[in-house]
Image (tube, rainbow, N blue to C red):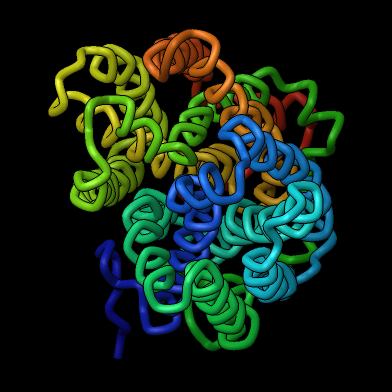
Length: 429
């Protein structure tokens, strides 16, 4: 009897859903780690005595080191080292080290060392190995799957406010850190010990579609023509990488969202409901971005987010609370969407054969400018009288990001491969 083809975006399969839930948790908990100095801003500013610029510098240092770590991990994945094993190696220690950070508060340097290590481990897993796993399991549904899992990024502000707030009430600062660390460890166990790198290794199918057949052994040993020299000599690679990096610059605001809303006329009592509104709106927006990515076109979805980035500066500077909330919702959608698109663009334009080779370089490049965001935003806010100037700066960057992506035209991959005289890439879209 012929097996029914499962093409609906909701048909992910049992193991597929385990992957989706685990990756969602990784994005969410990594995002919660990133919100540490926002959720616990009163503690670190008033009790410990560390300034916003100091704590933002720690996050920025971690972000810069993530670029290096992503390249190293990308090199390992192209050498066929298991991405799920790399994920487990990163996530489980990250959860443990993050909890240890709760007990260090007398010396900012002693605190920064383990905090940076746990952030590098978590964020490298979030943006490097997770992307490879999603591309391996869902070559055609990658857009909508990334839209779902990166809801974890969008919801991290809300989740961290309530989850870390609950931990803080129950067990103080160690409780706030501990709950995030435990969930991170659980996600590492799910990915590392329950799942495999390809669905075929569990007797399943890519996209949970029985009509899709891949010979994994042949697929894993296929050589990509996209060498480092070829990648670097392709202008579209740089256009996409810098466009995504500029768009993800917005992430810097999310690490300081509590100070942002407090300087926008809101009170501490408003924060829980604001975080809920922002998180839910952002999660829905992230999913919609994924659907647009899958059903229409990745480039169209990117352009929508870039337009949001351009207009958010104007909304944030109106002084109208409702429009400030809309600006922050745009911000979270951009963050979730931007993470979707890197995987989707590389997979869709370069194809499965070339994914690991290109992604190992694309992800660190996309992280480069965004890693500077926390300290740049904090510095602009401090020097120019508040976060309004930083929002205007982000809007200008959004316009630059839009121009760069508009310069990317379809078909450039096949044109390059035809010029090199190799068999053309077979696309998954």
